[in-house]
Image 1 (cartoon, rainbow, N blue to C red):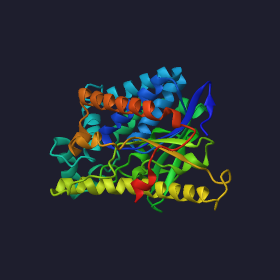
Image 2: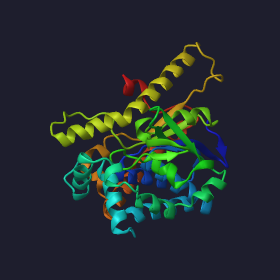
Image 3: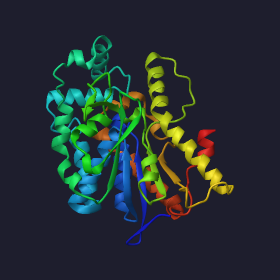
Image 4: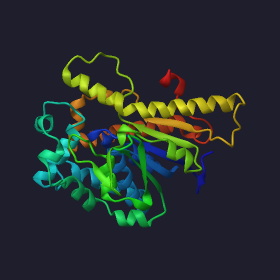
Length: 342
């Protein structure tokens, strides 16, 4: 059941990564926070989803929901073209977002030309990373570690084992977020305790299982910004690469959805005891075709007007979802798992 928090319903959040389209997630969070009827128990995230998670968490510490909304606004403004990034930081941010886009933009062309012939260990042997420096300035990680207000589960991928790793609130630093967002053709693997890590999207985009095992909240809202389905055959090299990445980054999410559906069916048939096994109630905001109308190249568009457009689209989607499904929280899942996984 959804826990009660001063009359509000409590949910977990699972935030996908996906370049500049993470601004859509900013809008979803903004609307949920503004609504006032929703409380958050835990947030899991990967890559840009991890960035949204820590920005919201620090804002909560500063000034509750209003503080979270302001911090998310300030963070996305800081990475926009209108933000205060240095030219080197700007190139790294554009290349990070451009790596999702396979476009003809200067950022992606620079990224593609450099990484086609050299690894980040060759073209950046000193491992200079202004992206990390900016993240450390934008987010007060010491404050996040010291707080127990909100559970955070940040996904990365262990390069040695290929398995997913979850970093939790009490240990988070800028390095952990960079590990979650480490695209291996662009950045050197982020070493934590001597273990190299790559982008969390390879092993959980976003991860669901820690929300089931480490919280008492049954409801989880997935904020999905990468389409599972596209009803067209990609024909250009860029479109093929983009669709390949979408499939790769959604594969673990689909596997976790299949597991949830399997356990739910066994509980419904009396094969498992409800109570011994959690009946997870999944919901989804996004994945409804709205973001799919934006071309892959827009994942690197960090202009402030475009980011605000994505934010507004996320706000609209969240409000529509709340109008349809608020009463379902704590009662039933609203994500049609059989239709998605079949």
